[in-house]
Every structure is written in structure tokens, then in C-alpha cells.
Image (cartoon, rainbow, N blue to C red):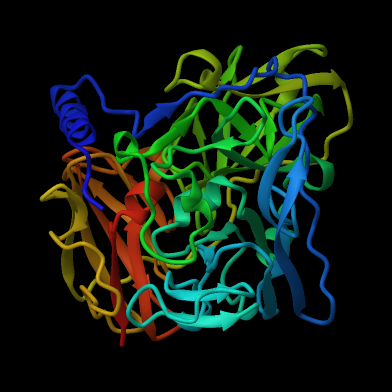
Length: 496
């Protein structure tokens, strides 16, 4: 699809502000709810159920339509893994392969991507490798499209280090609206190295899937479609309202599917696994009335040593594994996780209430892990993310399935130089990477560790060192602003 004139001009204006130093922190267009919104910090923080295997190393999950009470007194139709939003959390262990059979009972095709997973290409969630429901048209909507009737088995070797991963729909042209309707959940990989650490665990380890949504007056999800029937289309390109081509931001912040929830905590350390599962919204997370985050992990696993931050910028697809010590607050204190990039309702994320003192034998050790060393690169490539001829492109091309822009060799590493004209969170499938530099200068403290998603600002040059381990085959890199992704800001690469 072509970007509307209003959106395109807005993009260029935002980029110009970034150059001038005023900041282009917002990466989408605000979509306001028509429903009456609840008061913040009234809903208790829900914790998604843990997926249960149906046999050794085997899970089965059904994508289906369900109703949920997200806003008080209203029912919202969600499309969920297991009929829930978020979907169940998968607890995985390094070295213990699993098979997840995904059954599709939705009215549309789907493709499931384990974000951050080191997976074989056939289980990576390629956007034209689809699980199609009963009654789907027999003819593919795109060249090379593969259809799996009703069920597909995804095989995950789980050979990677302990990390916070997540899974979500990845269907060609429709990732944004289908994730918006609920097709996302978390997956936690654990290993012996992590087990040996005295980190907070059990009820003091909280997975937090943060996203934004907008709601119609009746409680249904609001999404800016030019044709409302587009949600149910089996094929063709998505029809997004032209004024939202830069990305969609809602005015309701959800954590684990609840609006601005609150969690009761003891005056002890808590491990917070932070995930930005928004379509386009970025967050700058802070604690009020003051406090610090001790980062212990990044997208792809534990850091070598902890890093302390006053604030954490987190773009769509990124994860931060942090510890917050609530013992520094008096009992009865209300602590707010805020978003410093927004005013009004979107400026709040969730609340914590310190209820009592309690024993705490947890700690954050000075040495956390022995992550892989930094390999020597064998090549340097550039990938430029920008609007070209009114469309979102990489290196001047709209997405061309089956046409790789690079062919790295398995077991090697390369420097990939990422540039763009707007704010683009760049996600690389299969390969994990380290941020080497931003505009030729050292990376930010929050860039630490091995990652799979990095925020590239307007006219910024970000160098990353990517490792290509584990599998040969076709994989992808793309912008994780999901509206950009749906409008062809993707590219293949082939590991040979």
C-alpha cells in the first residue's frame, strides 16, 4: 500500500524534529477510544496461565475467538491463543526440545513467530507459511504461499540461553490487526546457569506484557481500518486507514491484558520481565516517586554483569529483564511505573503498592553469566529503512518474498549497519546481535547484552554485530512497527 500524503508529510516532519534535537520520540498516530475508560490502578495485575504439555515435550494450543472483560462492565472480542489475551506463558528449558501444535479456529489464516527463538526455518513463522481455518479459499493470496489445513506443528530445539521470549502472529499484510486483537503471549527459557543465581523467583518474578489499545463504545477493539470487514479477509493486502500509516498508538495501556493494573508487593526485590508488545508505541519507563532498575538481562539472555538505570527506553519487540528493590519504600507507598514519553492516560503503565515487610534471601550478584564472546565479523552490510516512492522499504525495495538481500554463512558473524528516515525498531530473526555503535559513538547503557531488536532513530546509524548460528535457511529482518511491517518493510536473508 502507498502511504497517505498526510502520513508521509507527518513522517518527514517528525524526522526533521529529530534532526533539530527536539526529539521524534513518538512513532505512531494516536487512536482515541470511544468507550469510557476506567480509573488507573483499580484492576489487579493478572498473571497469564502457564501452558501445560499434553505429553513429553509436546504442547497443543488453539487459536480461537473468545470474550473478555478488559474494560469494566464491557465485553471485548479477542483472538487468542487458547482463547486468552495474552496467551499462556510457555516455560521452556534449554536443551529440552518442544513441539507446539497450533490449531487455527479463527476466521483468518495465521502464522506464529517465536520472537527471539533460534528455530529451524520451517518453524520460524514465515509470513506466507500459513495455518488456514476451515473454509479458507484454496488459492494462495501471494506467490509461494504455503497452507497448512487447521493445524501446524512448530518444532523448537530450545538450544539457546535462558531468556525472555514472546510469540505472536506474523501473517503477511495482517500482523498488526491480528496482534492488536490478541494473538500474542510470552515464553521463558530457563537453564542451569540462571537457576544457580539468587534472583527473585516464584511470586516475586512478574512477566509484564505491556501494550496499548483503543476501544469502541461497546468495548470492542478499535482499529483504524478503511473497511471494517478487512479483519475477516482470508487474502489480499490489509486496508489500513491512510492517516495511520506511520503506526497505530492506542490511549489505553494494558499490562497482561488489564488496563493500568496494580500489583501488591512486599518490601523486597522483584524480578520484572518487561516486554513491549505494542504495535508502534515506544515507552520510556520510570519509577515514581523515584527508584532505579537493575538490568540483569536483555532480549537474548542474561548480561555478564548488572547495569543500573534511572529510565528504560523500550521499543516494540524489545525485552528488558530487571530487578526492582521495593525495600527502599515505606510500607503503604504507591509506586507507579510511568511512561515519560506520553501525557495523559498513556503516561501511566501500572502501579505497585508496598503492603508489608518480608524476609528476602534474593540478591543480584556482581557476575550474572558468561555470555558468548564477541566474534570477529567477516562482512559488513547496510540496510536502510525508509519511505521510498510513498511506501515503506528496505534498501529501496518493498518486501519480495523469496528474494534475499543477504546470504551470510552459518557459524559466522557480520556487521549490519542499520539506517532510516523515521523511528524503526529493527528485528532480526534467528540471529542475535550486539549493538556496537550509534552514530559512530559508543552504544547506550540500555543497549547492553545480546539482542534481537534494536530501536533505530530518525537519521541514526546503528551498527550491530550479528551471529548466524544454529540453522541454515531463509529468515527475515523487518521493522517491528507492525503497521510498517504490514506495508512491506521486510526483507529476506538466507543463511547458507
